[in-house]
Every structure is written in C-alpha cells, then in structure tokens.
Image (cartoon, rainbow, N blue to C red; front, side, top):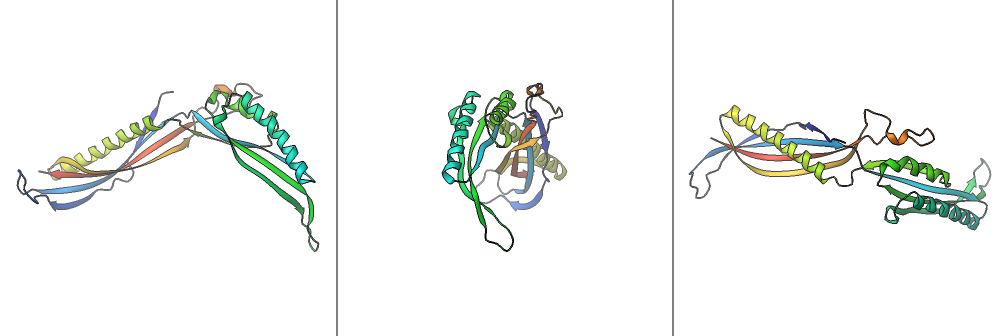
Length: 240
C-alpha cells in the first residue's frame, strides 16, 4: 500500500533573539546576527503490519485445585490452537496467571465462599495480518473466553520516521528562510536541533472492510493506518 504523508506545522514558534557573534578571532570580524527558534512537525502514515492481542481462559470450581486443573486443560487446547494457527513460539508470552476466591456478599451476614476462579492469559503477536481474523476465530473455537485487542503497529518504523523527519526539517527550513527574507538577511546555519518522536497512532481507513473479512463466518478486521510523527526544535542563525 502506498504510503501517505501528512505534514503539520505544530505551532510555529519563532522567537527572534538579537546577539553579537563577533567574540574571539574571526575572519569576518564583528558581525551582528539573529537567532530564530522554530518548531515543526512531520507525520507519515501507512497500513500497519503487526497486530498484538491477548487471549486467555477463565475457569471456576468449588475447589482451588479443580479450578486450576480445568484451566490448565483448556489452556493446553488454546496453546495448541495458537501453534496450529502458525504463530511462532517467540510471539506467544504468558502475561498473567491468577487464582482467587469467589465470595457471596449479602447484607447483614458473613460472606460465603462460593468457589475459586483461575485465570491464564497470553499475549500474542500476529505478523501476517491477512490471517488475523482466522487466528481470533481459532482462539474462540479452542475455548478462549477472554480476548482483548488487537492493537496495530509497524514492525520497522524507522523508514517512516525518516520520511517524517525530512518533511519536518524541510518545513522548518522554509519558515526560517521566510523570516530571513522579511528581515533582509540570509539563513547562515542551523545552530541546534532537538527531536522528539511519536509512533503507533491508529488512523481509521476509508474502506471499512478488508479482503480478510469476505467470509461471513470470520471476525471482520479493519487495520486502518498507523502514523508516526517527528517533532523538531531548531535554532537557525540569520545574518546579512
């Protein structure tokens, strides 16, 4: 899918600070110049290629051991289904195991122990989004009674960050040159650059259905787009 790039000027802050740059020995002698501080932001978006979700089993029984045993049996079936769905071992990680009592609370009487609840949850990374709906359906069919997600991301965001960075830099440079023209000066150099970046921002797609959702029996999935942004703070030197 072709990348789409959107560029935002995040509140262009231009503070003009007069200074004298003629300290020490210089072949140009004393020179009066101006520093201009500019903030800019570049943003690039494309369809994500990774999905993360969690799935687990909750079981209940009067006895704690029975609750854990039933949970282990159902969880074993779930793990087999995950493997059969083509998820590699490195992309499956246990995120929580718990056992807790269940009580009946009634007014004006002591609480009554009803039994125990056992819970086991795993985090799953799906690297082939075309199979995501089938993976979710397989989890439910294998006995997962708790499914959360998915959250989408980009596996290798650096190329997209570079694209956003170049756009932010071009915007800041253009703004600096605009100030220089207004002041009758020229952009001499960039004095400093600081960067902040943000990633993983979901963006809905205009098309709500993907090819993976053609089968009416499958869970429909719409990955949308994920955007990354780069914020730059630059200080330019302007001089005659």
